[in-house]
Length: 356
Image (cartoon, rainbow, N blue to C red):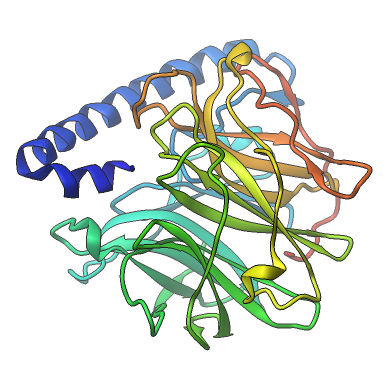
């Protein structure tokens, strides 16, 4: 159960306590980030290496485009984006506020923004709720850029509506198949389950959402943060399972052929074990809500949030990155979450390439 579910189920007193905790969590997070950044700056004498975390926020999305890296994380009151020519450089730059909304139906609780490239424009998908911060009113929205710049400017395009379940919806993502069809993935209630629908265009669902069953590997309460990785004729739907505040928050994976009917749950096959989870020896807990990106040198990377404490708490979730490889059977190998002390080598630079 997430903090937002806890608020609903425990009433006003508990809600007030959680709001207070939320405030102090953010203060602690900022202080921790300042300390970490200063310490890491002293340690990183080699400019070709950096250390995690690269951002103090959770729910990251990262893209490499035209020679720069662009990063978003959950900010709550707005959508902010960081831009730098290197991954480590994202730690030192100030963010650009690319969207802030004063429509009372969608002005609070902005979570998990992702930006995707369609036909020379960026479409930015995010979750938001009403000005009274009512968790049940969280819905998926999409912005459209004026041109090719990921920093915008952006204009509000639409709310994504599932005709058969126009209710709570978070953590939206998109992917395309080789036949040119596009699909939208998100987490929906009741049940906090993975859901998929086809897109008529980047801002409209063309049909009803379909629930995709997925294992929680012992965690019953949450499936969220779905994102698709594609390679060699297969689709790897990687998702987060468990409550994001728990140290056991982890990544699971469903697999389908890229020619399959992805709206049929039977097309997806459950990978039998988590593909990325806590590493107590490395001091990494609750790794999840991830994305994937290809660096300037063509190497494959995973971006995710995690924390350094095994405490059941939401504070301290920070953005980390690391390379991943591929197994002989064609499945991704994300390895173990690396410790914050690890020096990560920057990918080599290369000429700008179009977004995936």
